[in-house]
Structures are given as C-alpha cells and as structure tokens.
Length: 118
Image (cartoon, rainbow, N blue to C red; front, side, top):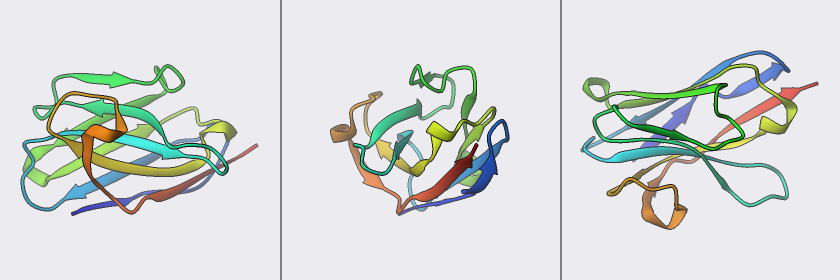
C-alpha cells in the first residue's frame, strides 16, 4: 500500500515536498507520475531501490528532486520553482524494474492534489 501526502495550493515560484509512505517491502524501484485535468497521466521521476540512480522528465529536470529513505519506507519529491502547468494529481508507484513506463508500475497510491496559482 502506498500513501501520498504533501500536496496543496502554492503560488507560482513556490515549493512543495510530497511524501509517499510504503507499507511492506521497500526493495522496489519507485516513481512519481502526475495527471492534469483532461490529460493523460505522465511520468515525472523515478528512483532505483537503493536511491542511487534517479531519472526525470525533461519538464521537471532541474526543478524537482526525487529521493527516498528506505529505513522510513518513504519516498519524497521536492518540487521547487513550481509553475501553473505543474498543477495535477501526483501519484507514487512501485516497479520491479528501472522504468518510466506506467504499465511496469504495479502498485499505486491514491494521489495528492498539487495546485499552482499564477
């Protein structure tokens, strides 16, 4: 089970940190996805099981940072310099392989809303 938190309303240029707490095993790759109104869900960032390898979508590279603390069964997404186009429901997910494909992520959280006002 995955539970996200940390979403909210923020002005453009502001920051938010999302958290994803996982119950059970943590030896999985993990990732963040987002879905804006009227759009398909898209990949945001992923991190390998050890936390040593990360990968980002071009749209967030340099602004977002993904990290994890396995001892706390928690993954984070630090979001800086937020833009109105970052407004979406953000989901965390786990995968058995290092991938950006949604189909490879087997477990998903319920999502947390991020709204960035201009």
